Length: 78
Image 1 (cartoon, one colour):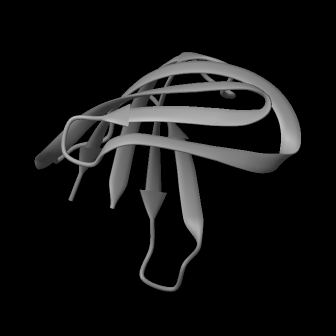
Image 2 (cartoon, helix red, strand yellow; image 1 turned 180 degrees about the vertical axis):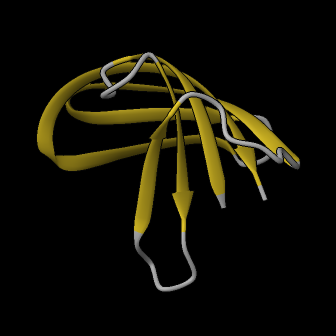
């Protein structure tokens, strides 16, 4: 799965995060192609609470161990 994200709170304003088959993740600056659109999402992370609104999966609310502030608009790609 590939996540292309735009927003504050990540290392770069625009980044691509790719999940590899072995479970590891690779983070790269900018948009990496090809893009095979799966869904679009908004992620808001304030403190330890994370709210994700995804066009395919709906609303998800969760908690993380880390304390951060992020506001992200993203595209999920295959």
